[in-house]
Structure formats: C-alpha cells, structure tokens
Length: 293
Figure 1 (cartoon, rainbow, N blue to C red):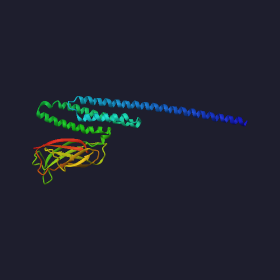
Figure 2 (cartoon, rainbow, N blue to C red; figure 1 turned 90 degrees about the horizontal axis):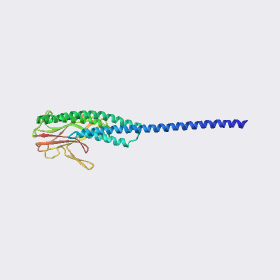
Figure 3 (spheres, rainbow, N blue to C red; figure 1 turned 90 degrees about the vertical axis):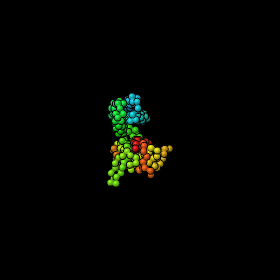
Figure 4 (cartoon, rainbow, N blue to C red; figure 1 turned 180 degrees about the vertical axis):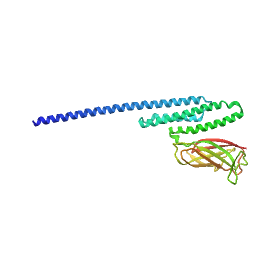
C-alpha cells in the first residue's frame, strides 16, 4: 500500500516537473522569438533612418550643384549629414541609439527646411546683382547678411556630430577708431587718425558647446603682411599660429557679442587693406577685410 502511494506521488511530481519544463521551454521560445522580431524591427527602422538621411544629403547635392558658387553653409551641412550617416552605420542597433539618431534626423530636417528657404531667397537676391555697381554693392551686403543669418541657424545642425561642440563666430568686422580722452570711440577709415583697430564678432549659440571660460585667437594682418598686436606664436600640432591677441570670455551657450582692440606698430597704421581672422585653436572659424585710407 505504501509503495503504491509513493509511486503515485512520484508520478505527480514527475508530471509537475514535465509541465514546468514545457512551460519554461515555451516561455523561452516566446522570448527568443520576440527578441528576433524586435531586432528585425530595429534593423528595419535603422535602414529607414539611413534612407532618410541619404535622401536629405541628395537634396543638398542638388542645391549645391545648382549654385555657381557653393554656399559653404550648405556644403558644411551636407558634410555633417554624411558624418551622421557614417556614425549610424557603425552604431549599435538598440532602442536608445536608434531613438537618438531619429531625434537628430528630425532636428536636421527642420534646419534643412530653414537653410533651403534662405538659399532660395539668396538666389533671388543674387539674380539682381548685375543691375549696376551700386546695386551690386548693396546686394553683396545683403548676401553677407543672409550668409551670417544662415551660419547662426546652421549652428543648430552641430548637435548631430561630435565636432558640433566647437565654437563658431559670425558678423566679424574690423575698423579703425579714434579714442577720445573721455573714452568715447569714433569709427574712422583714415589710417593716420586711427588710434586702434577694433575687432567685433558674435560667438554663435551652441547648446552642445562646453559652457564656462573659453578663448579664441584673433589675428589682424596689415597691408604689408605684418601681424599686429602682441604678434606671438602658438603651436597646434604641426601648425604654428601667429596671433594678435587672445580673446577670452565666459560662454553660456548663447549668442555672445565680443569686441577687442589691437594697437598699431610704432610707426602707426599703414594705408591699405587689412585682414582679420578668428581661430578656434588651429581652425579658422571666421575672416573679414577692411580698408584704411
């Protein structure tokens, strides 16, 4: 009687074990199937994002090819899209990574709409440049204004690649000034009346740039190819930079207007064309010219 009871209990235990094993097997199979389906869906989503980026790059190619002189903002935006595509190609295929790239794509799409709209406006303006010399001068000033506007807007595209954190500048201008004893500054185009050269520019807003103390190198070159100011050198890898001054400031991820002064050489300022460059370490980020008579 006791053996019969033990056999019955053993059979029940064995039955429960078989049921649990089969249940675990079905559950594991279900998880594996779900994982494969999820991976397949992520791969498909990744391919769609890559296709969207490729189409966006082709749109830039069309617009750039349509311009006799390539707009450097469009060329830079195209290069950044290519950089994002390269990064996406080698990235891990997971939900977090894919969501991040899709977010960057949406941001790029909005900025591209703005850039292409501004480019269309720029083409219309450029078509009127041939009317007269005065009209040409006016339109070129407007084109410069549009280009500066595009550059500010284009900084938003920087959040799609690693080098997006680099500071950029817009609206770079240099001009002579008369400095009164009261401290008042009067702009002048006369070389002999200029006490100093004033250099002004705007550090563009960049949410990805590191906030805090930053510095840029300003270089002012006179008509005789002399570097004015402190005229000191700094080495960046294999490149040597002669600079006029180091522009130091506290950056808070917002547009920041900066003006600096450069003193003349012992014999004063020469007449002629001056070149002003702004470097972020070894990289030239802005350039401009002006003339002293």
